[in-house]
Image (cartoon, rainbow, N blue to C red; front, side):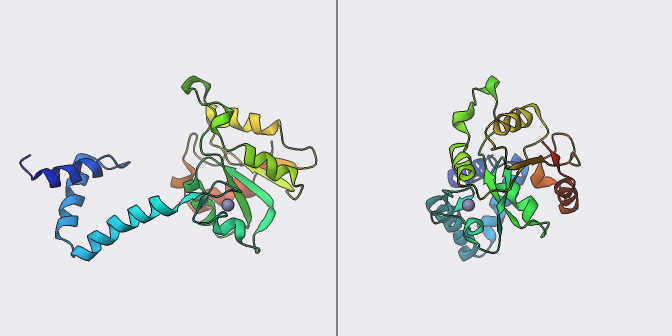
Length: 197
Ligand SMILES: [Zn+2]
């Protein structure tokens, strides 16, 4: 392609985004070059700002701009129920149901010995200290129905105190299905039909 080097770089960077192939990347690049300049600059700035400001919540590992994320700071949430997910984007799936009122814990990864991902790579120390506080009544495991998800769930089971109930989502989600791509009714059913782990 005989585009200018700057356009070529833009297309290459965009095509590295998940789900964006070379064709979509060049369509997006052309759009960014033709749309009002302030719109393109606002996008660039928001990418930069989010990378500069966002860090893991000290309590749950969700995206935060302060020590705690907005969900952990919210007194209207039920801090006695902790739903354990793999990544921050999984939270959106539960929030979109509009019915879940508990809080979350983001692991950041799943156990995968074959890929060299051991317990030290997961946000488990923070989960342990949340348990020690004694205010958690129920832990809901929302790790995916996969070998890694099951291994992670088993590992977590070992350190949940006996007085805390431990449940898993009902297997309403498609096998290996990604929470973030499931519709909110499916997610809600999986939550409401949760079973003892
Ligand atoms: Zn948080």
